[in-house]
Length: 570
Image (cartoon, rainbow, N blue to C red):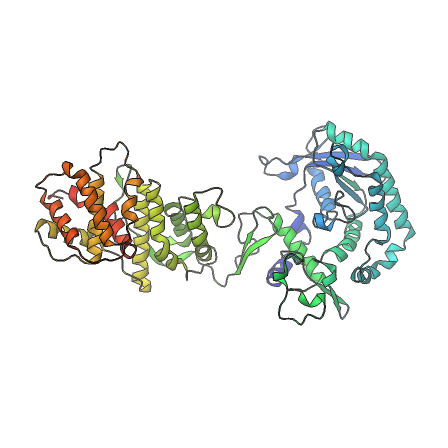
């Protein structure tokens, strides 16, 4: 995956360099101190304001004037000075910079009442002194890499500059803390020494050379090139033995690394993930339309889903006819039939009708804490197929999911008293089934008009021929809805329908219908021939067919226009 993505990213990087990353770079809230070559100090504060689209306008001097002109310079210095993560701090986790031209600490490290959070001044000294020769890095693999910087470490001028920078920080850090407090800064204090940006890059590269890999112990030198296990979108430690490469001969620790990458490539990979972090999180194709990416909603440089897309689908080859089979009315107006021509349009309709606008916002991540448990389970079960179709253009599992779980969406709406949504969901399922049958030779859905016409004809002519399975469950749904409509309850809830939905088979369904009939028979005219014929046909049905097999037929009976309220002229 990484090599595929890097091939595309590197072409952009060759053209734009680090500007590709820095153009969207986000400073963290804090006090920014620039120490000029004449030892004069400049102070700026940064407080991100999401209401301001241009993030650089949130940078101000101590006079509260906006200093957009300084943002890019600080962004550069900050980018080349920041550690990879807290586990890869240069010396101590309370200090976050990785070269001697900068110094990053949290304000709380000097004012916290918790002694464990306070930063010992002796640690600051040791932090700077460690930059002199990197002697704190004692592993064999680290020493091998650091040999490349032997001349730099022996430079006396460099050593004196490191000690000078330490002394300036040590002499002024308490003053920086007071200025931060006076200006309402509670997060970072970041100190930068004025020097050409090239110096920042060269010094930080020493840190990257020994810290860029997941664990330097996995590294191996092959023909003067260092290969190791990338720490980007990958981890391997004692708690993750399942990531080890099981097919390699385990001669030593290096052989179990699941993926090895050359040092120069991993530095480019870091830049790719840095660039990715500052792209709009909603953009699933930031690296071009041929790659689909999804990032962790918290760690936006962590890829949780990836795919190569050989094709892109916008317009559907065969338009889907979205028909209002159940004659659903919205605000007293019949909902018009529609034609769905694009994949985006289908995604929006599926999201609205089946998922009540909870699909697109929950393609990834946790939903148990946000939604009803049964609905959350339905999303977990079906969303991968939706992502594959709507984001990766792979429809193989889409219609399988519609066939297998489409009815679940209808039941979910019904059980939460959303009958209008249940009807729309049935319309959508029937429309997709009809499309599948027409173009893909799937299962042909019920023709509701013909079913209704045939049943009405039988009831009006007292035709007592045995009902087919589909006819029985449709007619049962019609009778159930009619009986429940006789209830004098102020609010008719889904609980009334639940016993019928739980019936295992036709026999149990008949028993529940009979029980309900005796409950409301006083409301039904004794000479109501149409209803009496319907009850006779239902009671004469002797099969023990499973309701689950014909649940759609039953639900269509419940949700469609009720034949017992249809007048002859209709």
